[in-house]
Amino acid sequence: MKKILISLITIAVLLPASALAATLHSGDEVRLSSQDTISENYYAVGGIASLSGTVEGDAYVAGGMVNITGEVRDDLVVAGGNITVSGNVGQDLRVVGGNVVISGNVNGEVMAAGGTLQFIGNEVLGDVMVAGGLVTIDAKVDGDVTIAGGEVLINGEVTGNVSVQADEHLRIGDHANIHGTVFYKGKNEAEIADGAQLANAVRFEKVEAKKQTKSVDKTAFFKMFFAFLTIAFLIKIIIMIVAALILLAILPKCTKAVVSSSMENYWKNVLYGLVIFIVAPVVMVLLLITIIGSMAGAVLGLVFGLLLILAKIIAVIIIGAWIMKMFNKKKDVKLDWKPIVIGSLAFHLLFIIPIIGWIAVALVFFSSFGALSMHSYETIVKKQ
Image (cartoon, rainbow, N blue to C red; front, side, top):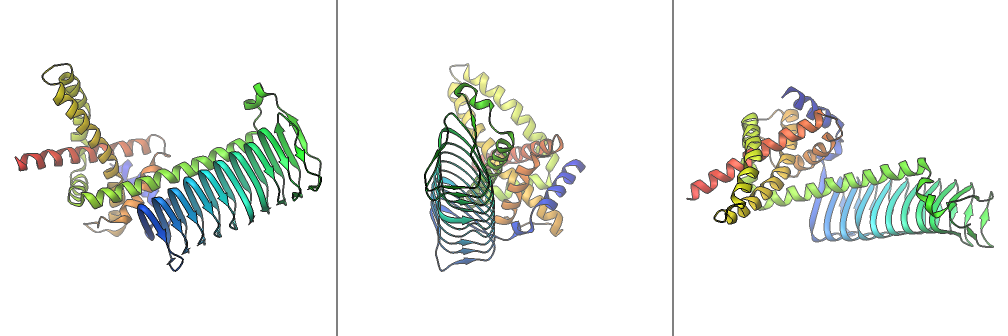
């Protein structure tokens, strides 16, 4: 118990204070109009997500189609299918999507990954690190550019160095003006237009097709790896937040009862959870191998799987409520978006802590699973 509390306190200290102030929007279609101003962090998830207003904090947006035309004063993180960022970003921009178009100015660095990536007519004041099938840099970059792609076109101004690894080819257009040095690895030499301005000759390293995967620049690889890791981490957090909000909205009484039971009888529910987790699959298999009990076994399997999913979501809320209770020193914690956001961040950050963090997550999960299973059983008995 002491180890768990220490881990949770550590996570809480590492959490940004801004996590306590945020606006959350979710649905099939999410829009922030041009007249709206959000003075805190903004989270949005939807089939179609549009941000036309102003966000004074960080913005995290995910959707099938995402359109950012407004201004984000701090960091912007976007994930989706088709993404357009034409609004200005005050700090860093991180994007992952199928088709990505960036035409707004960015005052920090840009990390992006996608099938098609286009920088059009904008200015980036920091470094740019991108990976994609088709990459176009037709913008001004006041920093270094690192690209891993299939086909790459550079047709803008770059004040720093350019490092490119292209499976197909690199083209440097008429409007390109590169102040630093171009380092290029590929199968074919770069195509350089007559109007291109290069401060130094292109340093080309020919790569044979069969050796291409072994010749990737290690620095660029790790930069891109950690960029993708950051983006994936944030996407998981956003998905978990939305799932917990939906669960709390659909089953408020059940969710509150399970959270309360887990926090009041923590170790008792951990024991229940462990026993059910071990025994239920055994019973399910025994039922499935019998003709009479096969239907019951199938139903038990479906219920067991559903309880596991719900228990993971509720575990997030339990962690958030636990942290808020320790800091607020109140007996009861209001279950709203605050413990959900804090819990989601803490739940995923605990995985970074070796052994102790993993044990902490497992124990909270089993407590949630045990409390949920017993609550479901008691509810069924009462109805009968």
